[in-house]
Length: 62
Image 1 (cartoon, rainbow, N blue to C red):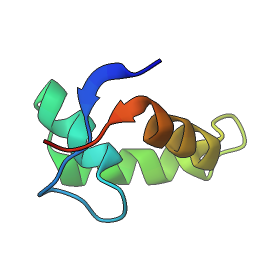
Image 2: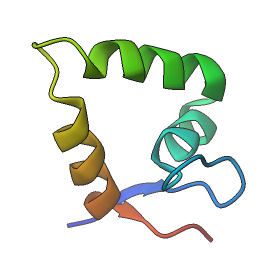
Image 3: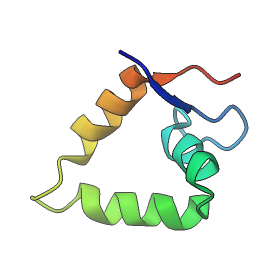
């Protein structure tokens, strides 16, 4: 099962997950990364697991 969002080929730090989400939803990528990092270190949001799942589900950059 793949979702219809691509990882970013140009706007990436590690795998292009946050960059791809930012491009798809037209968000500011820096702000999206900061929000993700803040959420990733809270006990209510398993950020590493969510990132890995998105890495598997999102299509390769075009």
